[in-house]
Image 1 (cartoon, rainbow, N blue to C red):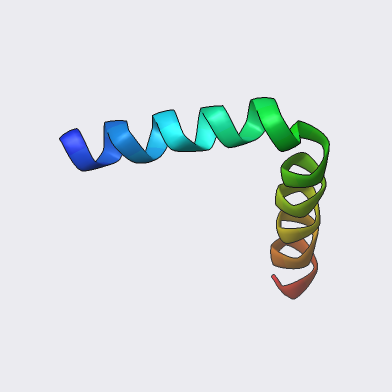
Image 2: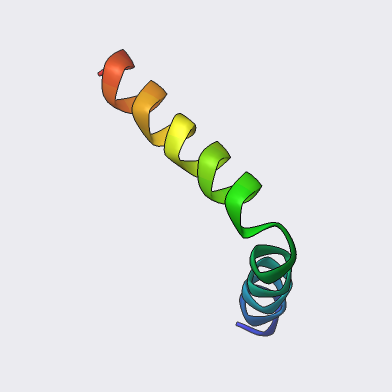
Length: 37
């Protein structure tokens, strides 16, 4: 659980710094998965 929390916090910090970039990457990954299925 601690590892997950640490990753979540790190992800949150990264999102604050590079919110647009990460958002775009996650969005693209979601689209790719949807298209593949």
